[in-house]
Image (cartoon, rainbow, N blue to C red):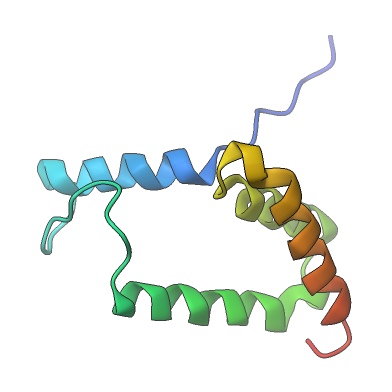
Length: 99
């Protein structure tokens, strides 16, 4: 029987689970309420991580690129995922030579 690939984790669900884990004492630091907006520091960290990924994009294996693309799109509201996928694809295409 052919082995099936496990479903890609929904990044949004994973983020919520990690937030609950933090609030249950799973991590040190100040607990945050689930579903609260990110602070400026967290937004800056995500921006830096995103920029680092884009700078390395062309050197990443195709399967990693696909997984990152799917995870990025899964962060959006399910009703808007198609639109976000299009925007991400356009961004990557427009910046593929500058990375």
